[in-house]
Figure (cartoon, helix red, strand yellow):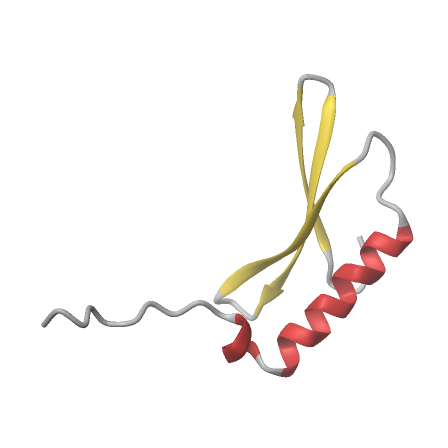
Length: 73
């Protein structure tokens, strides 16, 4: 799309579900958010994904889920 934001589009029963995402190095793809659209993705949705990407990149650790070891040991 633009500015390192990509789109995954899935069609189901005539509706296009779109997920906007970006890559975190070679480690992961991070989903910004999803929308339902029949035409092009509105620029404001791409802008929202870019802002979320910048927020993630500023401190990936606070935005990344990490399992805690089982405390029953």
